[in-house]
Structure formats: structure tokens, C-alpha cells
Image 1 (cartoon, rainbow, N blue to C red):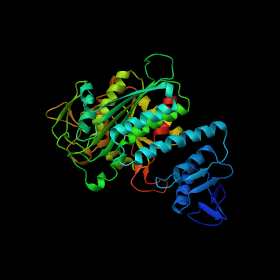
Image 2: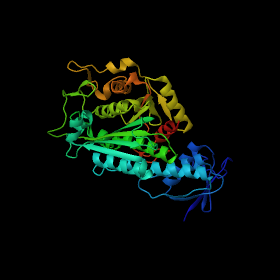
Image 3: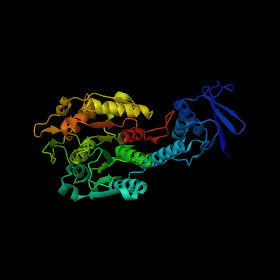
Image 4: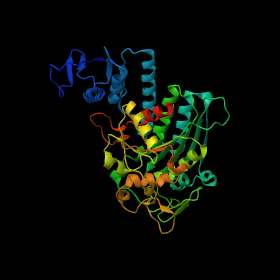
Length: 422
């Protein structure tokens, strides 16, 4: 039997669950009109074993979206009958739900299923399904990556029996041949991260299926922008690898030379995300896109700094950073800026190369998130003009919280989609 759910501004008379929810026969009332409280209430209802809902009465777009977010559960087929909205709002809600389901299911997928080639192909198929005639793509895999100069993705992934892959996708709604994209998106697609020879402890490795959250997030962002009517060309680059140990895995002390001439000494094989992102950032820079956005579950340091409620935002371009933060605020997604200056590019020194990929200490040492962003800044053109790096501290939860089920959250794809539209 479905539970009817109402919203009310009035204080709960039947005090239950912190004055947030009251019950009557086959119905519940959430005593708040604030989306965050609505999301918490949906999570509480789910925790009581209820998974079939009918939203009744005056529900707006944001509160229905918040209810979906809180009610989503990777183990339960939740049924929600939504309240009436305008045609435009209903279309927006459907688009968000479609994209969120895809992003969260991809992040929650097992690493055995989610091989690098699978991730690249699934992302290409999803975006192409939304606009078949306007999407083209190419997937480069295995040793072809090394031959093509995508050395970061190749080096990180060559230790696995399942080949690394790089997706190059173009969404082109114009009639022009090979237009300069309005924006380029880059996603970290580490489908499982053992840490390599800088191996993680078991507890730290447990949830590393989520390390492709950046790839899922930027793919979801492009998908939502298309569903919202995006009329500008956008390029998408996903750098997909498994970071595993074998006789063919990359090692401490190895030196990688990127096509732009930057040499990198490997001082920590667990700082692999920035190595694959470098390939995508070089491609994004070559495309001529005036806006470049990368997203990655890159550092534990960002989580230490901001907790799991905010994504960290880095940029050398104040205008680009401010534009992104404005977009995030308009989409009600929490993001917060962390420091990035030109000197951060030199924070990981090497005696044998231009830079190391990290400091050889746990978490990269003090300022680890900024130092990682500084490393990435070596691979964007024009001193980082138009580039924004998102460290997805809020993209995944090991366990359920008051607002979220365990697993992926999707936080970030709305903000990026908003920026693409503007």
C-alpha cells in the first residue's frame, strides 16, 4: 500500500521523529517546506521500511526533487508518484531524476562489472541516447593510449588485465563542421583504486569503486544540459583505468613524459587520479574551449577540509571560479573554494623530473588538495584561464547519513550543467 505524503508549515501535533514527521491512517505529513528537511524526512521514512509513496498537495519542484534524493536507495526499488507540476517543471524533474539514477547507479556498480572500457562505453551510450544525431565519440584503449600520447591513463591502467580507456565525445548541436566547443569536460574514471604499490589498507580500499565518480559526474552534467536544451557544442573526455598491482604495473620512481614536455616522477602510485586527468586536460586545452571543467574524487585532503557536505572548488581564474560558485548556488548544491596559486604547481618536488606526482607521505602532506590542483594546472593552457577543478568530497558516502543512502550522491552534476547553459 502506498503512503500518502503531505507537506505542512504547521508544527507537528503528533510529536514523532524530531517534530519533522507526523502520521495518520495511511498518510504522513512532513512539517517543513525546506528542501533539506524534506530530504531528511524522506530518508527517515525509508529507514522505517516504507518505499512506496504518493506526494499529495502543494509540492514544488525543489521539494519533490529533495524527496527523491532522500528516498533513493541502491537496494530498494522505491516507487514515488509525484504531485502535479507545470509542464516545464515536470520536464526538469524528470530530467534530474533520469540523470541522477544513471550517475548514482554507475558509481554504485561493482568494480568487477565496471571495467574501464565498460565505463567509457556506458557513458558514450547514455549521452548518445539523448541526442543520437548530435553526438559522436571515439574510445582509445590499451596500448593505443601509449601510442597516441595519453601516457597518464596508460601508465596507471597498464597493471590491470582489463585495458585502460579514454573516451573522446563531442556533442555538436550546430551545423558547423568541427566547431570550437563552448566548454570541455574532463572526468577521472578510476574504476577501482587499490593504491597500486603504494597500497591502501583494506578499509581504505573498500569503497574505491567510487573513484570513477568524476567521470560519472561530468557525463551526468552534459546529459542534464542536453535534456535542458543545450544549444552549444561541448567536448567530454573520460580517462578510465584500474589502478592495480601486477608485474606490469607502474612503480615508484618511474618517470612519465607528457606530450607537453612535462616530466613526472612517481613518488606515490596512490596519487593516480591526477595522472589520468592530465591527459584529459591536455585534450581539453587543445580543443580551444574557453571553459574547462574537470571533476574527480581526487583527494582525501578535500574531505578533511570540507567534510562530506561540500565539493571543493579550485581555479587560477577568479572569474571562472566565481561563475561556477554562482551556478552551484543557483542549483542548491554546496561547493566551497579552496586555495590555488601558481606556486602550488611546484609543491611536489623531484630530483629527477620537473615535478613529482605527490609528496611521498600519507595524503600528500599539508595542503594536499591544493597541491594536487597545482599539479593539474601544469596541463591547462593560458595559465589556467577559464579552468575550474572540482574535488568531489561530497560525491560518495561509505554509509547512509541523515540525508543520503550509502553510495553515490550525484552532487555536482547540476552545477556543471548550469554553467554549460550560461
